[in-house]
Length: 327
Image (cartoon, rainbow, N blue to C red; front, side):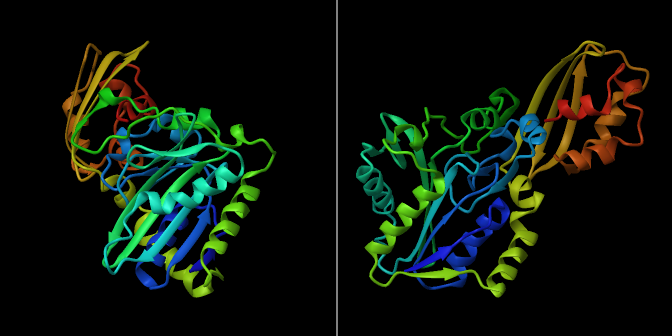
């Protein structure tokens, strides 16, 4: 068992590193890692329908899609993540309880009555502190989970506070649960890094062949290439979303009510219709036309409308207000 030492807090790099060790090695792996503020989207989810786009933008929260299914989760430096990667020749390792048991053992030693509940959650007093997901690639299993230790709960709730009325799609939706931080239940003070040490020591004791491994320069370069080609790209994180229809009604003081309706396929806007009680000196169909065949992404939309004076099409509406209405 390789205990891979991870120091990066870049979510793009960390998600890419999981795929790298899953597909480019054949050894059993255990990793603990943390991300800077970010939202990690399940493989089959519609990204925009899971996030509060305005809050995410204002707070510079990065959004990354992972390889596994399940719901969207918020990460910050108070959230610890763990990953097991093991060979599964007999297809017997795909077991949520097997990989979460070491975490429960550590918490039990700390005097916390933590439990495995439902399909893939760990809870304390009925409140969730860990969500888990798994995938199989060839004869390899990847299991990873979150551990809310001292996460900022306000950021968590705001970042994932999406408006369900905006989207009509068949994507897998996250189920929101009551959550808690592990640190709130400790009888002795410790920080998230000290907690990580306890888990690492416990895992090391479980596997007689455990040895520590630091990323080499070659490892780092290959992972960075995966960030460049996948994990850091709009196509993977947003464009890979299932097809959806988007609708948002915006009420402004100067422009009245404006309703935006879009049909989106593979992250690309196929058609836009704009309705409302606004006044216009130009033909809004010209704006509808340029908001077609482009990614549902802010830079692409800004570039598309840049030749137009938006206020002449929607009385006194600014470009920024228009952009806000499209997310």
